[in-house]
Image (cartoon, rainbow, N blue to C red):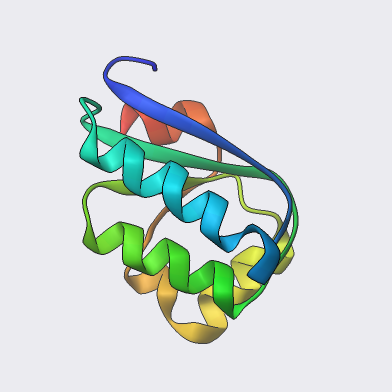
Length: 99
């Protein structure tokens, strides 16, 4: 935890196989003492609609910030319009700072 912000490092593929674990991590963080949760996507290699749904559900549960998504995830967010809903930052430090 950094400055009251929980950082969840996400790696590999964010798909049906990883969705439940990611959901527990994000929603558990949002229900805990953290003021917000930063999902560090800098090591994500793939994200599908299942992963996107996890992010959107978590967003509705509190202050979720996405940090450092690779171009493929950024494109997914743009194509679906999720970038207008989710707070996306270039890196973890910026996401933690909220700027």
